[in-house]
Length: 311
Image (cartoon, rainbow, N blue to C red; front, side, top):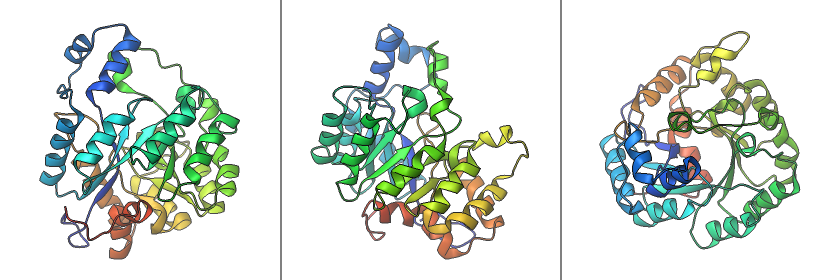
């Protein structure tokens, strides 16, 4: 439990990137450099090759910060086995998400295996990163796989997208913002009304559009993760408190999921993000019930985890 203005809260983080050794190996292959050279070039603590060892590090880190659970994200396609190993090692601490690219010929089989064999629960789509429309039949096919299974969700990155680690390695980021509008989710959310969709970072610059879709589709949720620096590009800049006020007015507290966007060591769990969001949500007038839902209850409900599960 973490102390807050509302009293002790059980916290579940809906957005933690699991930068496994295989993740860095995949980046190294893109950079055409040895994995050891890539790890040496980055200001991060190199993860152990065994993903269960990295999971143990994250488990201890979350315990230190009194965080009960976290959703771990495999941050490149084909790294789903790393997150699955973490979840298998610490099932009471972690749930697993994985990234898939619908343009890859083997994507349907990988998604099916990730859900049915590896026990992962979140399909992550990054249309702007990989250059496809959510209306593409290949994207729709992956979403249909998720919709056919209970206790799964689809996480769709919209809006501003930058990957700092790629810049550090000199890798290009030819992302296509044409595919980043949350409005593209509208028809899909209507077609799968029992499947939760999650838009991270309040839409990352598309707050209005994300809220429009959420207003029309009760299965669309927003996650609150990262510093939300996208506020700087708005015509009329908003404080984080104002962002929460608008999101609460449209979505209510039951469709907001707290997240940090934590990813690497030695920084570890991004406690400053939690502190800023507690301050903003409290200033927005949220009561204790709302805080309990946003900071953990909603994620655990979506993924079928008991709020009484041991830490």
